[in-house]
Image (cartoon, rainbow, N blue to C red; front, side, top):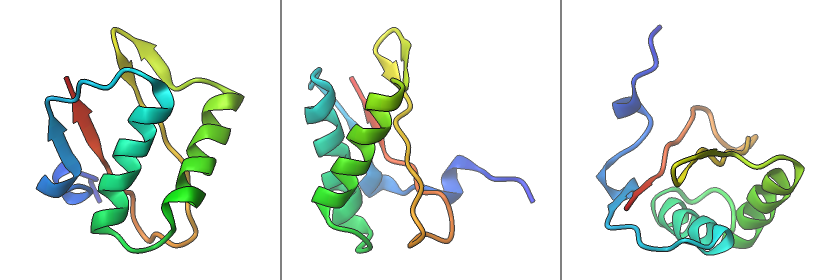
Length: 85
């Protein structure tokens, strides 16, 4: 089975005009978007998990692009949240 981006996000999880630059503020904004659409974990738990993951190794790949990610036992499929300048 092919995984398509359209299958793991929706329009409520895409924000164009993303002008925040500080890592933790970006993560908070993306998490707020995710929590508003998917009721599975609290904002604080997700934020902690993302920050812990970033502290192990940054997911930044350059040119203001990063791919922060975590896993959750409460999900049965990947979920994608997108923030674009």
